[in-house]
Image 1 (tube, rainbow, N blue to C red):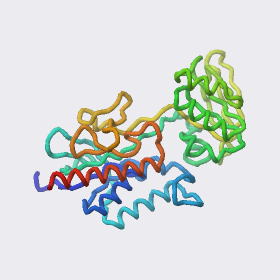
Image 2: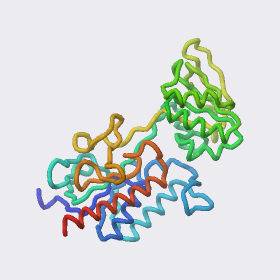
Image 3: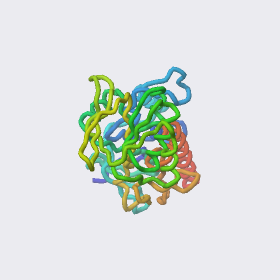
Image 4: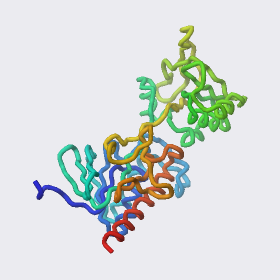
Length: 316
């Protein structure tokens, strides 16, 4: 069995801006990184039609195109980018053990976790249809709000993030309709009051989404239902934003890596270090605040530098 175990200096779990940036830095430091792309090669950005807020792209770029360019840049410096996903880890001993696709065993000197987080959606067929079409469904107001300037939009959610995103949209859009499933917000009072006091935000309590309406290409409205009275009506809108939370893709690290109550990896403040020596984290797996491509890329750089220093200290 031992001759089938691969030994790797630096293993990067997951792609996206964090993983690919870590691969670029690790390659240039002669760490010969191996990167497994995971179940969604390129990460969340591959579901984003236009990226206009990443530095260096004055005309914007599509999410998939940007990820292919980042991947090519990492490969240019020798990163070994592979299909497949990590299904199991064992960080209990001196050797960091990782299994790919339940079969291949890898022993790693360092590991960089870049597994990201997945936005939660309502799961409606119509919502998924327009999400895939890039026709008006989004889980990131900061990323996509700009495309809805002077238009009317709907946002679903009742927590702090939903309030923050609704307030952000209110500065761009003529009207924001906020759908709250219960008769009150889950958000903190200060955040709830902020949206309540914003003139162009209309809050509909006890309201759920029945269907995202569209013309087959783009969103034209939302059919909603009052879950107390049972009444339904349609709201004209060109954008439908979902702000019901994110789920970090960190389940396989439970029991080895310290996670917060929602599953985000807890890093040592100011660094990419985790509670396990030689295991580092970058991107949205540890970031529930900013969740932007540029911040993910920044932490990918940090993780590679931290991993390089760790190896230098160990070898020195």
